[in-house]
Length: 470
Image 1 (spheres, rainbow, N blue to C red):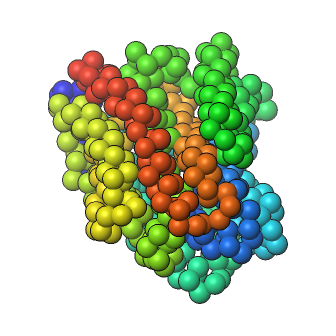
Image 2 (spheres, rainbow, N blue to C red):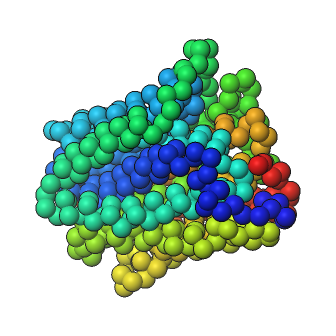
Image 3 (cartoon, helix red, strand yellow):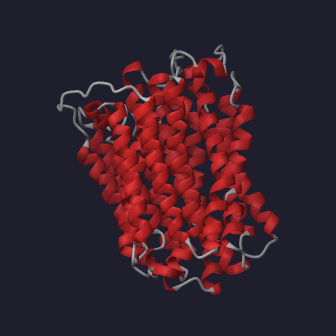
């Protein structure tokens, strides 16, 4: 953000006919936010009902892998179908995936439903990111992203309550029926709120080769949790990381790209920003995926209580992001660095307190992670878009969603690999929960440390020289 730039008002955010699309963005974010929080809350109940403990992490990584593959093609989908038709199709596919998960008789049908949910949700997320990049000037982005954080705040209050109540009542399937209905409502709202638009000629292409390598990388990391030994797990995770790097290399050589020029170079502001978002999500997904299971196993918490403890991350994110949304000058650079460092501290605290300390300290540790995101995430996103030309802002916005979802998928797969080595593949026993409650967070610390390094570049004085794109 430039030193002389002033923050836009909420009136500016909603002016010039942007209100309907802004509402739709919030609705799409709600589906993704509430889905992840509810799924984390009810997964222990699903594991007990359908079995397949070794595939516990796949419910999240499969959902996110579908989201990654869909989000990267959402721009082309909008061009070919028009924004309204594309959004309606995405919401209906999400609803269909929810229905399949609801009727699943065993774990593999359930996982197929989660993948379909991921594809539909990924298209919605990608369409939302593209809309943000195109509709809102750089000075408005902190308020837009703080509003999105507010949706997460609503989700963190309602999501664990819904998931916990249904799980404790033994009716986890009803949760997916509820979200199927919501997906249908989003489809209807999109049909009413969005203009029809014109479908473009079908000459627009998707960067399938780098996108496929991203999918291969996620699958390799997901397979790592089935090897059962440290050497095999490490090898598959290493191969997965290599696939991600190859995807960036392939993308840099293509005319049709997933990311703007220089995105694979951490010496650029937007390259460092993408790297920071990716690393942060890799590091923090263990809390969301395995935190509720560890808390229910070790402390005897209900699904409702465990969901709210882990949900402190999203609640603190929202509470912190709103007061800092309008800060300008040197503050964004400072908050990027300080926020990412706070996430590292929060993960270290989780490793110290998750197993044996008072539950209040677990809430504090989770809250520190959320507060770090609240301080930094919107300004990292703003720095990325502010470093790009007008021609690349749309692809840059979609790239944020792709990187975030890729990092989340890789992070959930990595956490699953660590948890399965700890014994979770054979059930939620107390010894396995104690080991996983420590090592899921310890394994994340080196990744978070790398994020601190890349965040230093995003929050450097050079970042303040990014052009103000009005």
